[in-house]
Image (cartoon, rainbow, N blue to C red; front, side, top):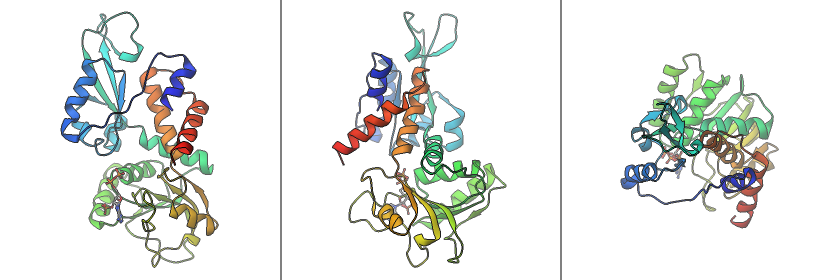
Length: 281
Ligand code: ATR
């Protein structure tokens, strides 16, 4: 999606993927800095490690506690910091790395786009309290959801997260369990677990404790496969559904804007993503 966006804007830039062992993460970031990369995206398992490996943290990384985007900035002769991607002829006298997080906004932009709902006041069941689940829970609390039900295989993580949310967002109403009564209609269920990536995975919730008939809409952060067992079951139960493609797109668009300072060509990026996912289901 990034290369399609560069082509659309006529930028002579390239986005390339590297597999980096976590033990080499610092060296990889330093290498990219030395080579004057405009920036980096990071994914599992690097997002939390990178928090300690950048020179500066943008407020987004501080709030959501993870870095998925790094921007390299150079000091100009006038001693101002400017994104390296926006340097023209001048050579920077010094380069620093700044960590951002675009995942959290990516999720809420996608939820708004896919379901056309405002999150404020809504009842949400969030499945998963790992890296992705944690950032989603904090972001949903920041969006003033009415009540947030949190469920995770390892219950201790739910309690930790509940405590963390209550510090940053004291008015948030968190319930560390499934919504109980069948009449308790939930506006939105979000899967932030990794269950669904493999075809023989179980559903990410306990059918004895929750029924999809209780839910109006179901969002699965997984985008490959495009339709997980959860989304299939949700459709059957009459829920609106969406997969994580929109989240992937919007976090990418935001990173693109952070690096280039230009508006991301969303339609091009979406087209490239859909095409790629169709070719590699
Ligand atoms: P990510 O950064 O993608 O969120 P993660 O931090 O490893 O990755 O989190 C994975 C999530 O999927 C966690 O909520 C994890 O539950 P635990 O906290 O109990 O590990 C959940 N998960 C992974 N495999 C699971 C399984 N077999 N059953 C239930 N939950 C599972």
